[in-house]
Length: 212
Image (cartoon, rainbow, N blue to C red; front, side, top):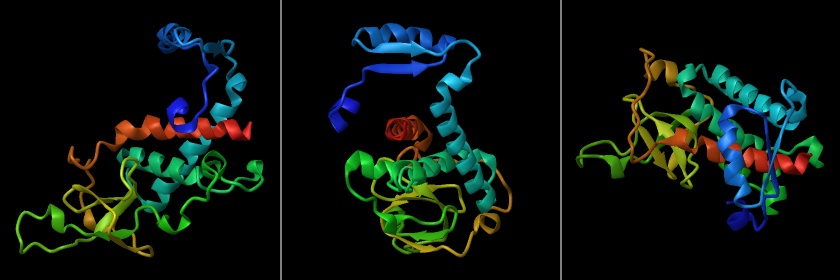
């Protein structure tokens, strides 16, 4: 992705000395990439990554706390946190955003919405019969990494991805829509968002290059 999407090359990758990275060394060596390891018990040698990881975790927890969402929505909160961090101006980048430095264009701030607010996606394409309503109140769970659209959760636990959504950013309906807190079922055709988390985390590490 670095080579094809950003016209650059990877010269070295730095990780800790965990056993899970041992096969990774052989893989990188096939491409002439240096695998640098931190010394044992020296997390400060990976300080940039540790700080970015903490930034993502604290931002995601803040989103969950403000929205009063249970922790099993952590994956959506983490995706939204990285999405926002990458688009927010940073004082360490001369008040530019990582998105701007990578793409040399300003992000679309008009598309940003309040996490967990009430939203009303256009659901007619999902309806099984003509007499079903064309929209319903849902909870906004973030931005689809694979579509130019929004992720919306309805009261049955189904997730819709739609570009046609009306938002009410002063209402947070999760508690009223879900009287019993339980993990939601996700439709394979419209979700599988947790598998995209490494993609967004990778973006954060790429953007981190510009702040070090």
